[in-house]
Image (cartoon, rainbow, N blue to C red; front, side, top):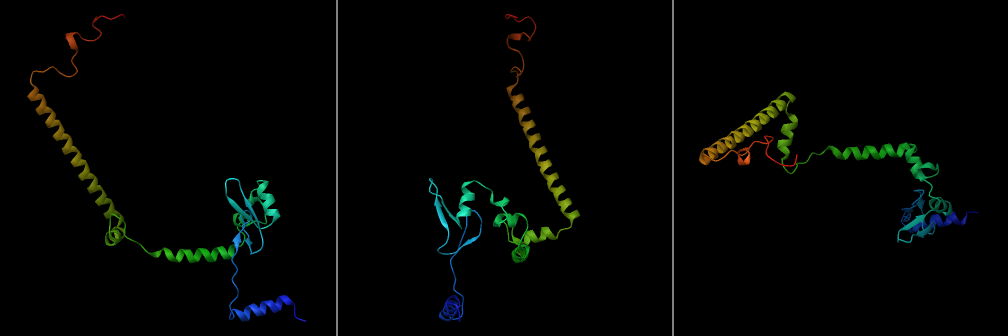
Length: 180
């Protein structure tokens, strides 16, 4: 008296060579649960967006604009309230293992980056101060050159009037006319 379901499962097991049959599942857009083939309700919005829901309950909640994170039976709620932690911890450990490599960046090669990383903080500070000093000296030099150029232009101009001198020889506010 073996059930039909058990016989079917054994037949599938033998026909696939011992490997379990793989079913393509889709996740519900509201609950986040798996939808197996032949299940689910599809909703197509007027703008063309398609939504696949696990069942009428999920569809109804979606149309009522309920938030899945507030309903205890949805995947979003379980994630927000830190349920099913054992699977999350395993995933985190796997991800963390891959981050050990350092690559060269566009401006600097890998050797230069490693040298800078190995530098002591005092040495790094000293090199930074030296670079700042150099930049400041360059700025002073360029300012001095500009001042010299202005002085040379002023000598060439000779007897021309100064830039800020009033026109017509009358200073502002010395009874120069006008309504007020």
